Image (tube, rainbow over all chains, first blue to last red; front, side, top):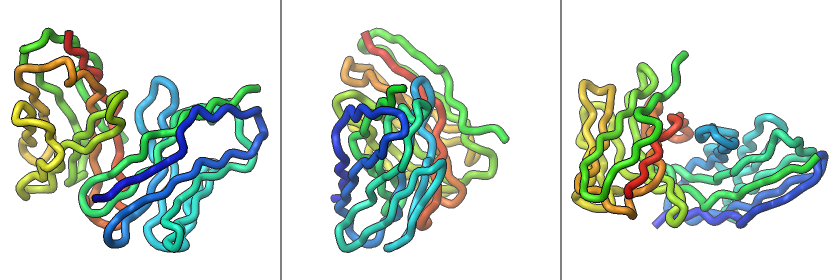
Length: 110
Length: 116
């Protein structure tokens, strides 16, 4: 069945550091790929998405590129802020449901 | 516009009791989903409704779990004879089209269920 694997956290960074969260997937067919973010005390929010190979999703300085050849969708941000502290979930949609990775907690220190 | 709303935000119940959780999707969204977020299992799909089609119940963990969607809008998730392992945050999401490439699911704030 479909599955998503993402790096375990927590990831602790200093402000303005570069952030990468690795995400790889296994799926039949051609899924859409998503990154969701959960800020402390808040619900899940869509951060970015990509629907086909080589698409790049971007939002709030975050980027991720749909790599079919490596079945990956790594999340990157060049310069993180304290406000980026959150739990990040990689997910795929193949059909009518989302399959999520385990989540990566990111803590950005001033 | 209004997002997905869920009620109650918190529910504490005793083992063996039944509970009902409610979800109001975004107006105009035809697809509605229930997920469960727990420490041990992460985020798990439970059930999917699309218009008037038969729901996809493939994620429901046992026959104690059921859900309905009335009038294509509000949905209720019912857990009968609750067990301690049912303790989790139950998330509802809705989307415009459902099962279409790139269709985005919008999540509610969740109901935190604690079974004592």
